[in-house]
Every structure is written in C-alpha cells, then in structure tokens.
Length: 92
Image 1 (cartoon, rainbow, N blue to C red):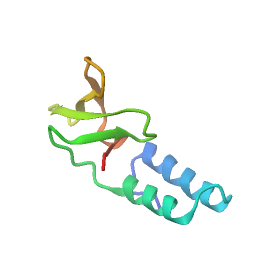
Image 2 (cartoon, rainbow, N blue to C red):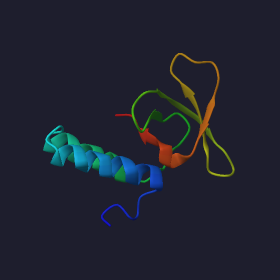
Image 3 (cartoon, helix red, strand yellow):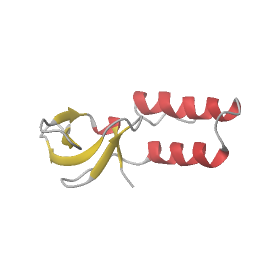
C-alpha cells in the first residue's frame, strides 16, 4: 500500500529494498535513500545524466520522444536505447 502510487517496476524495487532492510542485509540509510530515489518524479530533459534502476548502465538523455519515452545513450555506446521514464533514475 505504501508504494501504490509508484509504477509497477519501481514498486517491486521499493518492496525489495524494504525486505532487504527487514532481513538485515541493507542498512537504514541505504534503504531510505533508495526508496527516495525511486519515488522521484520521472522528469527528464536532454543532457540529464541517468542510470537504470539497478544501476547496471549509466548514460545521457538524448531526447524525449512524443510518446514520453526516453532516448538515451549509455556511456561507451554508440547506439541509443529507448526506455520508459519510470525505468530510469537521475544520476547524482
């Protein structure tokens, strides 16, 4: 219920963070920081640094498509990827 307003992919990741905290695998600061990042509005602009939810890829937003999806260029890659805004986080 706590994560009902989040998109499905982010809801699963937030629940996983909470479960890892309860199991003692994750400290409180890491859990709250992760949930705060997942709760951010997906408001991207060209040039923004982004990363995937799991942090496996990082890159730069190239353009926002008319349907709201994000065209982004992963670091060290020449091919753009297309992603839903809820599947990316701002890189800090």
